Length: 338
Ligand code: PEP
Ligand code: MN
Image (cartoon, helix red, strand yellow):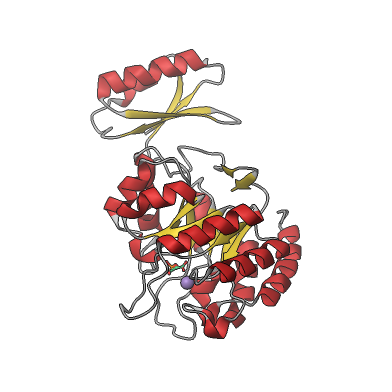
């Protein structure tokens, strides 16, 4: 349920109203002082609240029922786009943000080399997996804490914020220490115990869509994180499983405009995991930008053939550089900056 307040309502009256709502009906309130209007979102069991009791409040202009089960993630609760700040970097603003780096962190030199090259090409964040959720238990599982240490080093040397995937809440302390954005991978999108833990921290989360999950399920997973108090969630479309086997997954490009319509959260696209082949990464990246994505996360490796994971879909530093220059005119065409 959403209360649209009268334009002249003071902050004190909004606070008073919120306190009364919590006391009278046991609901949580989420006031948003937007550019064009002030609204109060009600979260919790609103079924017993008589609409007339709200409509007669002097500050209330209109009461709207929200049908969708996601509330805090819902654009109706928060009409303006959410912008997430990491130092000077703004995610979800006019500028499209590209995160790039290897699938797995393999060595100190590897991270350093790739970090320097992606930064030179215009990436604003470094990606790299330390805890790798592999399909086979016999595949490389990641350098784990040692890998994060190398990422931390590269972050310091290159002045590049970092994003890395968490697979278990018991890794949280390590991540809080050095990672700027914590990634939740496709396989953990519905790991609700992990999501609840991430709701209690103060660090942005990059939440990837489960490869067999609907857009609404993705939004409900975001809601798990947000309901714990962490509202800095970035959503990421990374391909879903379909009958088509020419690519590793099928990039659901329509998820971008649908998400932009349903939620105020920033929307990213990972063309690398969707494509599965380096040659398709560029066209998918361009399509994502054209469709309105706020950013991209792309795998880059200096020696893809010998990469310990996902080499087939990794761009070389030269291919990444070319992609970045060819993305710019696409961004220009839709009035975005790169
Ligand atoms: C990754 O980013 O390397 C990764 C494992 O992604 P996903 O969870 O989308 O497969
Ligand atoms: Mn990967």
